[in-house]
Length: 276
Length: 271
Image (cartoon, rainbow over all chains, first blue to last red):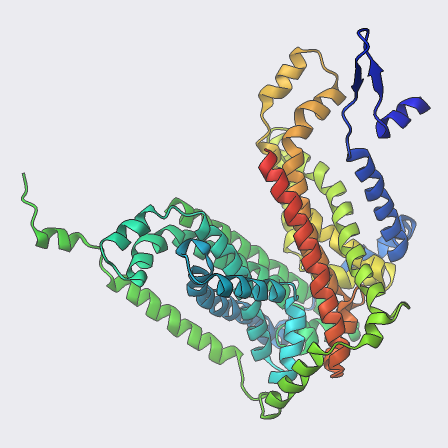
């Protein structure tokens, strides 16, 4: 038994009858499994993960949910502006971000054979920007632009821009360039070539990317109010400190419903776009 | 036969005016929405001076924060962020795989699928900041609440993605193993795992990217990670502290993105 375990890590060597030696194939997987397990355990200790705590106090989770029911419907009139702002901010941000991203992504795809240094440096700058969560961008912009939806909208625009550009240029690079070359050979200008040959191919993908951005932005916009960048987050943090859980329940219902409706609408629109 | 003339062909060219009308309507709608939501009141001349100061601070990160090894130091917070994202992904995967199997059409009966699909949709529709708040109330503030939040978020997304790949399993291979007299374990090991492992691993790595990035956000509701310290530094205008944390976060996320892209590409190349 012990021997078998050892041989998982150190492959066996067999000597055949004709004197030849055969080594078992060496696999790195067992070592990776051990590294992985050590990492999991170390992280668990580091973060204080303790299933016993969850088992003992997991009931609190539903306790809070329970206190949110029934929601306080009268709170709707106070929060409806913030709720609308959240959706509007993500819509505006996605529209601006994706609208700017569309022309730029043509510049950044390598199959149009543009300036290489520009392409690489711009892509690198974008991947740096992409690592920043919307919230960090928003809290920075809020210091510059002041409290309000403007900072949130801009932060969402920047985030949508970086995501949309990346997805678009990766998609454009996989396209069939035959039609583009054919138009180019007739002497059409580059803009004409793109409009005539490439845009019809990327149209569906672009709109579905936009919908994806919009959807994920609505989810992330909920927290932006925490740093004063507009939207429902301000209401969430305010009602939480006041321990008005019934108001919080209404916010929760409104958010959940909005996201579900948006997701269903996006799925429907995407199916329409893909089938034409 | 009808004669083809230049004019008749030209008339077949798609009309442009419906697109113009749609475009105009969209632009008007955006302007209206902009006016409802955005106000310019907050923006003053001081904003420009802040940009200059902030940029100078962000590019001269404070070494005091970087070299601080205690629990408020940069390395500790970065590792905490990574740990939250990583553990959230691991636990999420462990829960998501059985979820995905149960909600696949070819494994369980339809009504069971529907129940689980509704649960998955509800999990996904619930905003993650709410999970953060509720877990902080449940297990107390700290990284553990972040781990739980990330776990739930991962379950929602991973099981949705995995359902598709489970439904694509080729039943022929399992039937062949059946015919060869394999045991249940062997069927799973040699019939199902090779078909699923690459899609599971690539989806999980993708989620790890997202989780590490989002783990930094949760700090704001008290669920650990670098986010809270970073945002407080920005709000207190300690720009060089913020710069140190920002660069740390950027490097961490880029590193994880790089590694996971490498692994995903090598998986895609193999299959």
